[in-house]
Image: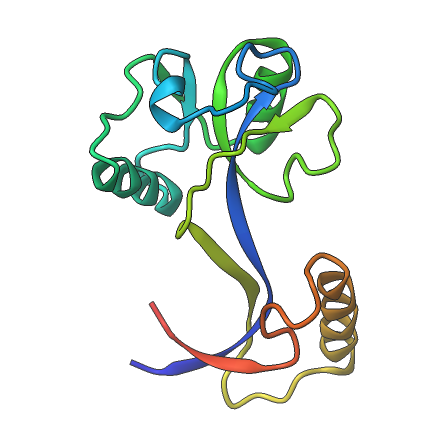
Length: 160
């Protein structure tokens, strides 16, 4: 196995999200079991997020929602959230600026990921690649609280 350098830009959390019209939107004291009666959109079984959600539900001693569809397109999920009464799990930034969506106050910790770039090993970065990294770091710095993530560092990543 070779180690590849990876530049982490920011940490991404996931949220349970509904449309603003959903009956659970704004409901105080909401718990994950309260949402199981609603239809859900889950990521496809081949995704890392789906595996993490399944493990989360097992740790919570809850079954996966029975009334569910699978979808890996965030654009499709967003539209279904706006047009129907489904519940979905999305990366925090996907619907953060969409006034038609409401994140629910239920934490899914420890589900989340670092977002970054894997770089070539033993090859110098071109001037355009270095410029792109500077722009991405600057954009990522605006997405997170100061001190979060490792935007300035490069960490080794095992090649798959």
